[in-house]
Length: 286
Image (cartoon, rainbow, N blue to C red; front, side, top):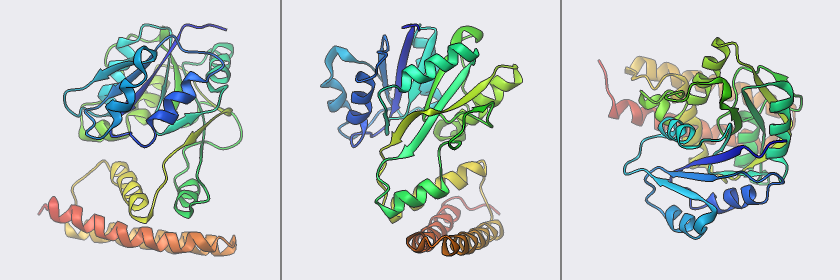
């Protein structure tokens, strides 16, 4: 096993979760050489919390909000270790997360490997919905070359890469989402392998309510659509498509006796409709 590994965390307004995130890194069975936090111009108490860690962490403070793709490129070029781990600021690692992923990365000669993220607060029905409808893992079995490796938790072997701008950050889409999909595609085009390890567990610390969950879901759909501007007809079709999906979900939840999730389905539909119409009004096209 090697200790030639660092880890970075892109953070923006992460005051609610960043402490648990960093503490889980400090508790790892294999300690990274460096813990780098890239604060993307937060305007909450994130920086105050970061400063309390003293020399246990290194901080890069962006002078303006640059987005996650920019932060990833910055970290990969700043950190000089062979292996570079990354987790989101709302992720808590199990103690052997680095140990398990690093061992498999080396053993199987993988370039990018990711672990399995669970929702931590599933007694909250909105989080349970997110676990069922917006899962951020590939299930309970290990996979060679899954469709992509989730950006929320992974380790990269940089020895097969030329450092530089390896993550896309050229469009608003890649500033906020999708950079992990594109990076995974780029690696596969170079015949470099990906791996998903179901044993390397981490936990999502977000704790949603109806509105925050709906905003999260709406962003997911909007990003998946390439953040395209829509006319009214396309906006209406999008809402109808979501209504049909809601009915399908609800029938499935009814069969599975997941009655609580049925209510959430319609709460999400309600806010989704409002958010989509608001987006149309703010970005009208002919």
